[in-house]
Length: 452
Length: 93
Image (cartoon, rainbow over all chains, first blue to last red; front, side):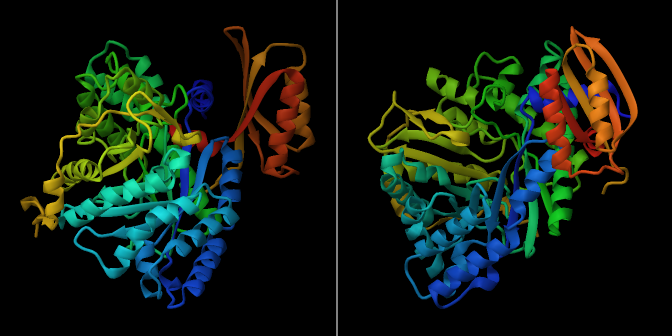
């Protein structure tokens, strides 16, 4: 029998500590939608997504009612469009994004991810077409997310693509300048991109994945922070143990929801993504959770150590709770989507260089960071190159989602609204790296990639 | 996955006459059997936890939620119904 204490503890997690399931993401393979005729290919894509995902939102809401667990997002990820569109006779891939957007709207989901290309070792003709279509695709659609994998530990870093993505990010910003460059909030570049990530903007369904699959992303920085409040002043062993216990409970909710969604939709369960994903709401912040360790403000010295420990303890507790863990699985540190990060960035205490260090010990990377609109494409590529190096040489996923907001500079602020939040424009070191970026070519894979 | 179709009903709010009576009769209307009940006043807040059996329920789940929400509003308390699987998943290995 469940005790009253456990019942009330659970109630508080949902009502006061913002525990939620961040996303149920249905992965759908579009491999069979390729067609020489663009219109036919787009029709096939639209029809297939609508057929597979027609009940996704309803099932999410039903499960949410049964357990009274908030399920914030229902999303779709698809096979990278650069693969699906390769057979089509066209240079412009925007129609594919439009078809994805239309399908997302019909199904009622929040986002669809997979306007993507995997170019860690080089470009196919189709990859080039997709990348060149990104600014237009993101400007003309509402719910489509785009990602490009530029590097991996196995292959090294494709520096031609790093150079080109600096330009594409600038173009995407300009194309959506009237909306504070929101296109860039839907565009992410990766090193070691996971094929089963349920989180946006980087979700896509990898080529090793099944026809259709359910992946679930959990959340809950507020729950972990609350647990830590009860062990104030105690040593770090106690802190680690407390985080593990909280992470276990959070992950079990995710596992329960994932299994039930999989059963109701008759689609196999893929993975639980053990990530602490913040929102801009007070009480749902990873930065505030780090401060609970005993930091005056996130971004000060000690932050990286706290984050490393947090990330590790969450994984240890989470893996006990679910046998199938995947995706990004680690704490997220997006700036605009986290109330405490926004505050620390505004005060000037949290800087890009510290965020870079923090990405060495948690998932994702320089995420949702607004920078001055006059930052050059080469400097953006330089930031990307550094982040790709961290991922490639440390055998982990890293990513960059920067928003160079046209016409805005340090001291200004951008407001995206909803889960995307708001952000102060952060200063960037503008010393040129253009000569390095323009060399092009590949950075060879690190020696420890040779494991066979 | 569901072996036993049971749920936990939690009632939180300001104490007053007739809370248990009203909720029990609403549950009875829906043919929901109360298997266990515990009630206390915690920090001046009326706190009740019930284990209920949903096996012979005569209404859709969304209907149960709606009726309990309405009853809660009338009584000025917060009533939540959650399937027992949630608590077992979170609190039992």
